Amino acid sequence: MDSRQWVTLDGTPFEGQADQFYWLWIVATTTYGVGDVVTTVALLYFDSSVGEANALVRAAVGEFGLAGLAGLKLGVFCLCLGLQVVAIRDTDDPVVVYGPPAILAVFGGFTTAFNLRLLLG
Image (spheres, rainbow, N blue to C red):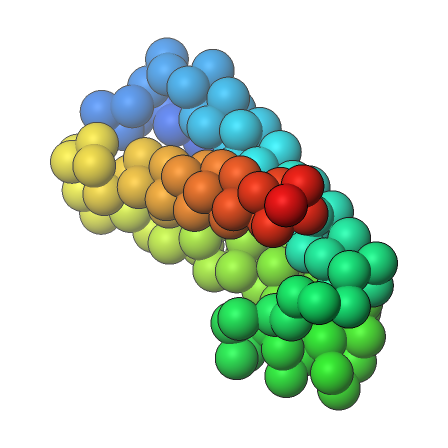
């Protein structure tokens, strides 16, 4: 099986909607992958008065440093991408299919804004 066919939207109810998928993942990467990581790093390494509230992130950063944070974020991205690929094949419900990147984007936007508020006082 050709890997390009494995991830295509052809033959699904979402055929012709690739731009929506791209933009959702771009927004998710910007908010969760970049915004949250940058603001978390700024808080952890440049503001000693604030600590990480998430126990999993705190443990990963404490044990592995920035590599732990990056690994955790990449793991969540891979999980969400895998869920979306499975959902595209098994359902025609747009909420299930668009959910993983949309949830990452909303969560990333919230945590980025929250971290910025902590950074700015």
